[in-house]
Amino acid sequence: MEKLVNPQETIRILQKYNVKFQKKYGQNFLIDGRVLEKIIDAAEIGSDDFVLEIGPGIGTMTQYLAEAAGRVCAVEIDAKLIPILQETLAAYDNVTVLHQDIMKLDLKELAERENGGRPIKVVANLPYYITTPIIMGLFEKDVPLESLTVMVQKEVADRMQVGPGTKDYGALSLAVQYYAKPYIVANVPPNCFIPRPAVGSAVIRLTRYEQPPVAVKDPAFMFRLIRASFNQRRKTLQNGLKNSSELQIPKEAVAAALETMGLPQSVRGEALDLAQFAQLADLLLGGNF
Ligand code: SAM
Image 1 (tube, rainbow, N blue to C red):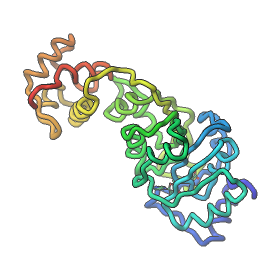
Image 2 (image 1 turned 180 degrees about the vertical axis):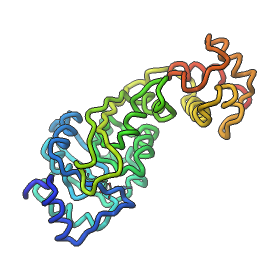
Image 3 (image 1 turned 45 degrees about the vertical axis):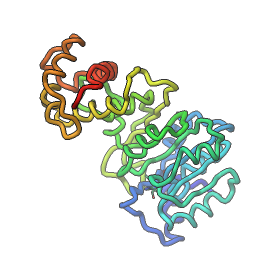
Image 4 (image 1 turned 90 degrees about the horizontal axis):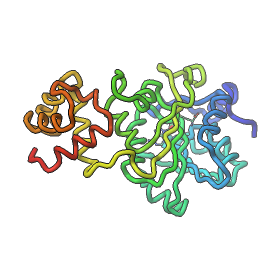
């Protein structure tokens, strides 16, 4: 079968099966071979690897993954694409297609069953409407993971990569950087997809840490603190944490912690890095908030 990665072949196969693009599923199919090669290179896939692909679409990236990996499991929600995938992936005996909603699948169980608990690689051109829940779900549910190499909105990739002192810095940056080392592989313009998305895209690789880069007694409490701190990002940390819906921490407790940390009383949450949030969380932990 001819490689799918060109606009004519993508349109031909969709017409053959009388399938229309489903906006509600975030369907923007890749039509640029160079971008696919960059993704495959960045993911460093070898013949021993088990790769999970989220949203194979018509199988464009799956064909490349099947050629590089030991085994591929591709999870697609859209029933209309399943017969197409059966045709486009017929030549590969190392690919399993699951017709499922990725949000409802127990990925930890899948990785354990399919790869004996060894870390898997996730590679995907993600549906943008659920990018963050997919990525955070993989980390928080303890799926054995080596790396994620994914296409996301450019703005989201930037938010995942930046540190304090930039406008994109926020709860997502800290959450991702607690679990993984981010690296933006490439920026990808709308004309590499059909239909063209309204926004720019980027490929980001997140390499999972074996151990988080900071030690914190209660990570869940630290993340509540981070979310509360960024909910009202123009406020000082003291005011933000006093009024948050997640936590109500008295100003005096925050003031005492800031004093111990040697930070100014007027500091905003957006100025703190991950290590400082970890320290703040440990200092406030056990308080009666
Ligand atoms: N991988 C293909 C490519 O690069 O051309 C398609 C990528 S497209 C951006 C996202 C794909 O994810 C679509 O095929 C869409 O149907 C699928 N998808 C959307 N929501 C999903 C979900 N909850 N579970 C599994 N697949 C989903």
